[in-house]
Image 1: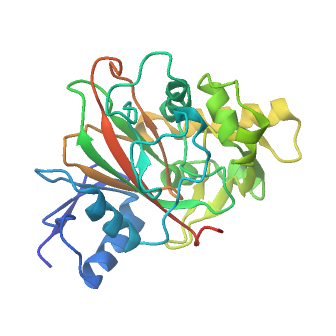
Image 2: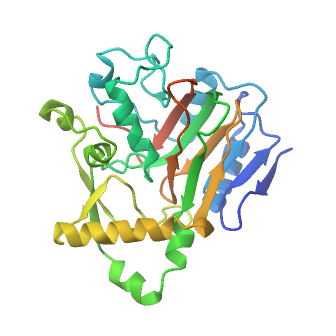
Image 3: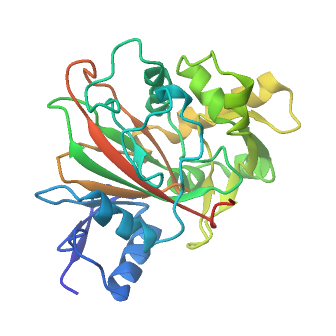
Length: 292
């Protein structure tokens, strides 16, 4: 079909060459993307010019039902920069297109993205694929790091795998946001994102491989004393993000990176976000259609 897939890391991650996401993809090409991400968990597509919103949305919709940002717009005073709720703004820009000031409340919310996490694990309807498009990037920093939760699980001692089987963790976006510094959250705001519970070890629904399902959103192990569960989650996160399990992506404008949230964790890294704009836009597919 005129494209190639080149591994980027010994265990996961690959660059897809010769496939232009700015054009509609044939069904066979979508099938090839799914086959590749089932194997590599992170896919990189490079373009000399960024995708438009419509092109990014079309690619996401071809892969599954899209998340709509249902959380109330409390961080931005009711205003948003992007008009389509299926496009998630991963930037340091306000509705006016300018860099948000240092005291902007949404900065604390976004600081949670610097912690290792899995998108939308705080919902019962989990994220499958995230597709992040780089429109404007800063000159230095702002890499995104990915960790392979399948390889991390495979490397666990057998007795540890037995200990983890059947355990559930509770995930809440407000837990991770408090870790990032956002603590003044009202009950109305919390009600927009209630917590959810998920198995700590799950079988990937398409590949069948077992993987750890971790995130900074995970606050405790269900049924365990909170401090004991917290210690286990911290231990597993530190273990699963060792260098041998990690790929760091250095962004170029026009890049599109797609990852499987059921097989990986990721985090953003810092840059001078009071001086340089960073315009990134994400679409995220879910396990099933969102409830109205």
